[in-house]
Length: 325
Image 1 (tube, one colour):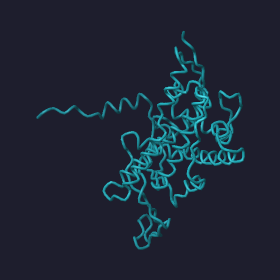
Image 2 (image 1 turned 120 degrees about the vertical axis):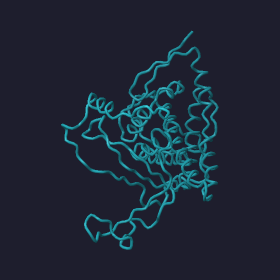
Image 3 (image 1 turned 180 degrees about the vertical axis):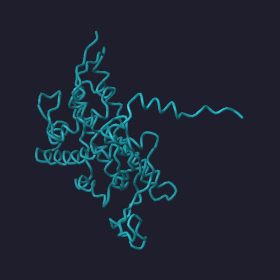
Image 4 (image 1 turned 90 degrees about the horizontal axis):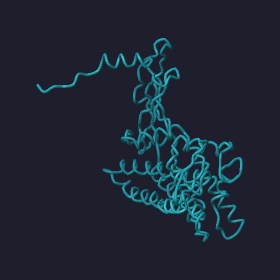
């Protein structure tokens, strides 16, 4: 016999068919290794003092962090919308779906879900998936800490700079490693840079670690006519590594909740050694976290190129295939 598993991925209705959905779901949940992210952060942190490899280690830490945050929110999204068949939900969600779900939770908007409630906020998510404390008072405190931590993660996850950074690192390593510092100064001659001795730093602390990358922006809101912007982000890899450990713990606890769908024995809840870890996870001491440099210009609407014009110009100026001389 084949069974159907009906679900929503954000607002998209989907039906999966499976001869043994319970077994599929159990094996999938067990296959997710939440400890991987904490392990990767720890291993790469050991190379941050190595002058030859520190930038590579920093890049690995931030990429691992992005991956961990996405995995956490995917686990939460699956737990809300398809806890009995999260295996199928994971195959069908996109990053756009996930950002939409995270945004709905953060902004108290309605979200299709398996739990017969209209809305979720991050406290309600914590109420759903966090359990196992020794007392109701302790449980409430723990849930509040996780909810606040996830609220901060969610604000970061939907930020466009965060999205662009992740895409540029994971696709072809398009991000150049290294932090930035901004200086300002009064011009002696209009249009010419001020002399170096007249420049003053905007922030008091220079950042060693960060990323520099390009992002595209539509011209006149047309998806085929674009320009490039230069973006830079500073980060503290030590702080990111510590934050990743909390994300790993969060993933483990969501998976523990999901295991209750097939195993009624309540596994232990994972917690940091000290609740101050939730607060300290965001104390990165970065004064200037991001910067965007864009070339401002206007293209008259009459000059915006359509499909036919782009193809004509592409064919007109294409290269000839090289031949052996």
